[in-house]
Length: 149
Ligand SMILES: [Fe+2]
Ligand SMILES: [Fe+2]
Image 1 (tube, rainbow, N blue to C red):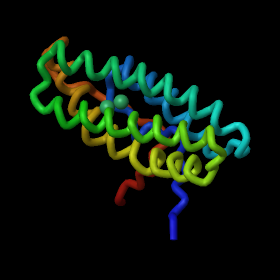
Image 2: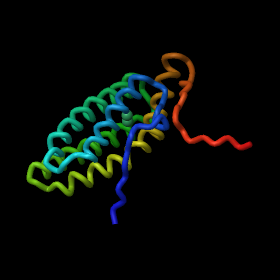
Image 3: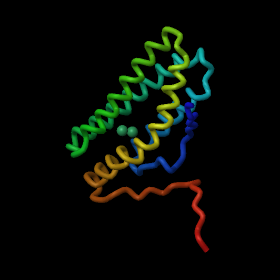
Image 4: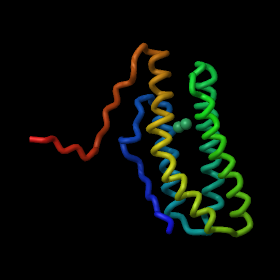
């Protein structure tokens, strides 16, 4: 049975480098829109998502190459794998296979928070260290933190 993974922006995904954080917010909003879309609207929304994903991944890939980020190849490969899946599903959606479109959106919602936490945050630390000499300080709002008394 497929688990439906709902996604919405949360500061838990902040990584402290504003250009990336701003693009991640747009990325999540687009996945969320696709999750709530009517079947017939999905092809157009997936096309818009593909544009956002290409542009966002290109900018991260460029930063990794320009700064010679050591573990860049696995990060670049992951971006490429996602774009390949999106391209395949765009073709299938054009033929009316709406279920595969919904599955892709679900997989994107499952994949994205982990990608941000593990790969993008490491890149953010690297860039901030290069630019400012230290790791970013990230202030996260609205997290369910219960202090122990
Ligand atoms: Fe990213
Ligand atoms: Fe990334």
